[in-house]
Amino acid sequence: MEGIFPFVHTSFIQKATLSTHAISISFGCKIIQKIRLYPLEKRLYSRYTEIKFFVWLAKLFLGTGGYNMDERFLWALNRMPKTEDTFLSLLSLNEVRHARTFHESFPQYGPTPLTRLPKMAEYLGLSDVFVKDESYRFGLNAFKVLGGSYAMAQYIAQETGRDIADLPYNVLTSKKLREEFGTATFFTATDGNHGRGVAWAARELGQNAVVHMPKGTTQTRLENIQKLGAKVDILDLNYDDCVRQAAKEAAATPRGVIVQDTAWDGYEDIPGWIMQGYGTMALEAAEQIKAQSAERPTHVFVQAGVGSLAGAVIGFYANLWSDNPPTFVVVEAKAADCLYEGALAGDGKIRTVGGDMETIMAGLACGEPNTISWDILKNHVKLFVAISDDVAADGMRMLAAPIKGDPPITSGESGAASFAALMALMTDDACEEPRALLGLDRDSRVLVFSTEGDTDPERYREIVWEGQF
Ligand SMILES: Cc1ncc(COP(=O)(O)O)c(C=O)c1O
Image (cartoon, rainbow, N blue to C red):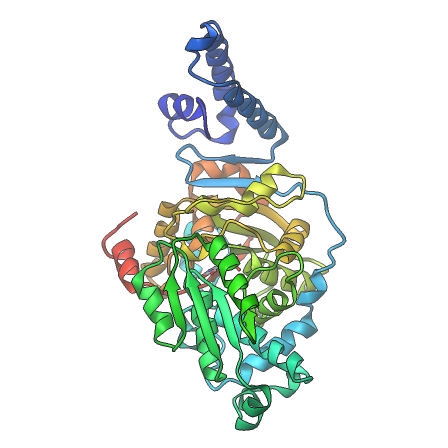
C-alpha cells in the first residue's frame, strides 16, 4: 500500500484482518478530511495518492483482494472475464502423454517423489497435503529440464520432418540423426534452472547453448550451467531484458534458435512445447495420487514467474479433471507479482512489473507474463497470491524440518513458494477471508509443487540453517 495507509494500519492496528478494514477505512477518511484543511502547498499527500486510496476502497468493497498488515501475503480473487480458452487443448491428455513418453526414453528418467505429509496436514487443519518433489529431476535439482528438452526435441523433429514419437533419446543422440540435423545454437535467458535444463539437453543432444542470466544471479547458479559446456554470462539487465537480448542474438546467428520458457505474440510454438514438457510432472503427480489410493486433490497450488509452469499444470488438470476440477491457486513473489497485478486490475489484460525485482525467489523474478499461460490462468485460477521473501523462507524451513513422522523435503526459495502460501493461508489470522473463499478446511486435499531443491546450496543453508529472512 502506498500513500498514507501503511501509517494508518501499522500504527493503530497491528494485524487487522479484512473484516476489520471498516475501522481503518473510516479512520483513513478522517485523516484525509483533516489533511484537506491544510493549504494546498502544505499537503503531505498528492491528489494521486487520494485517488489511489479510493480505488483501493472500491476494490475492498467489491471483495477482489486484500493483504495482511505487514504485506507478507497479497491476494486477488479472479474476477476477470472468461475467454474462449483456445490454448487449453495444448495441455490435452494426449499431448502431455507424448511429452511423458519422450522423457521416459531418457536413461536418467524416473518419476520424482510425491511426498504425503499427514502430520503437516493435521497441523494446518487440512485432510491431506501432497508435495511433488522436483529436487530429484534428472539429477538437476529442478523441474525445468522437462520443458527445454522437450522443446528442443520438438524443434529437431520439425526441422527433420519427423514426428516426436519417432525421436526418443537413443534416436536423438544417434550419429545418424546428428549428421542429418547438424548443429544449431540454442539461446536462452534464465534465472538458473531453465538455462541449466537447456544446457544439459544441448550437451546430451550434441548441440550448442548460449545462456544469459540477469544481474543479481549468484556465481553458483552460473557455474552450474558452465559445467554443462554452455556459453554463459551474467548481464547488467533484469530477466525480461535478458530474454529480449537472447532473442535478438538468436535471430542474428546462423542456425540460432531461441528456446525461451515464455511466450509473446508471434512466439508460441517453442513455449507451447515447453509447457507440454512440464505436463510430465503434473501427469506423474496425478498418477501418484491415484496409486496412493487417495482421491484427486480439492486444491492445487502452483508458483509462477512468467506463468508457463502454472499454465501447464492448471491447463493439464483442467483437462484431466474437467468434470470436477480442483480449486487452483497461483503463487508469485511479491517483488515480481505481474499475474497478481493483472488479476487485481480485473479487466483480463496483462500487467507487467519492471525494475530489478529483488527477491530470494530467483526463479519467480519475472515481470512479463507468458501470453499463452495468461489465457489459461484467466479462465481457471480462483486466487492469485503474492508472498514476501520471509513467507517463502518460512515455507522452506517447515519443509526441511516438518512435524515428527513426516519426511523432510529439501525445497529451495522458489521451490517452497506454493507450500509457503498454503501455510500462510492456514496459519495467519489475516488470511481468514481468502481461506474461506477457497473453502480450505479439514476436508481439503491439497497438492503443492516443490519445483526445486537447494539449487543454490549456500543460500539454502543461510536461510534454513542460519535463519536468514
Ligand atoms: C524453481 C522454479 N519454480 C518455478 C518457476 C516458475 O516457472 P514459470 O517462469 O514458468 O512461471 C521457475 C522458473 O524459472 C523456477 O526456476
